[in-house]
Length: 340
Image 1: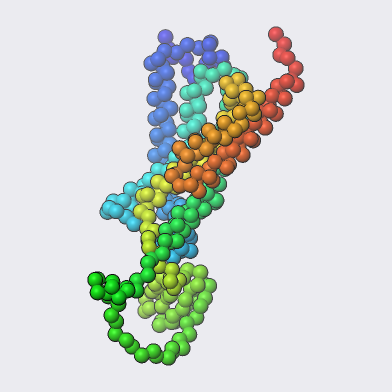
Image 2: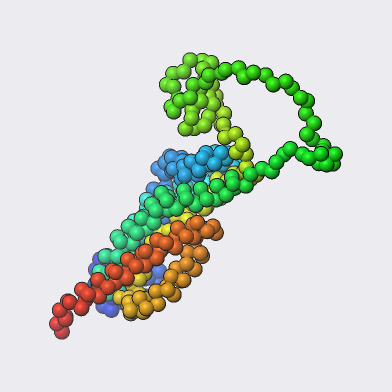
């Protein structure tokens, strides 16, 4: 007996029976097509990953520069930059090929759903994708810069101790004995302070780029520069992330916010299915808030600010989900009963 084609199957799952082998064959085809699409999409992403990595690193770069910390990443092994680069390629490929992969999974799952259930999926999937993207935008524009500023700022807040030894410390560990020099009058030296580098500076010219906090000199072939720091801003702890750890932090934060922004759909599903009635969600709102705080603590990175930045929108989205569930219930109550 030939296997019924996917297009020829009935819209009702009870009208078509398939063996386990046929289900596995369908699943194998969906997975194979998804993998081929992922490989095809990842090829052009090899050239885009450099710019994507710069976009991902930009929030940390701005925070480090403001805190007078080294504006660069560390690599703990010779292959770490290579692995991180191709991790970005894979992530970009998954994002771009994601709709097609979801469609392939949907063609496999839809065969076992009733028409009414499929209608719900058609309505909610675009909403779910939009919420996930909104979570990523919220993470990148607000949560990531604030959490990085808090973490890096805390390290910069720990200042170096007074390095001037006392008389006893000089006897024990030495130091503090420096040759005295006569104070010399300051020679006036005027260095141009600019907001943008000059387009064609002559060889030997020097200037200070104030926004970048870099002193630059035009050489024979290239422009040389060195970073400058605020006087007295030396911190006890130097914040120097490895590129792999920072990318993992951003990924965890992005997935956490993308999943957390699905809260309205979760509330809508619980209320519509009757698993948790809407009246119970309203009655036990304080308990729900506690659950939200616990969930945010599990999926968010282990710092207080990220926890708070995730808990607050989750609660607001919970309230939005209850509004949507109440609206849906009112529509269902006003709808005429279905004729038998």
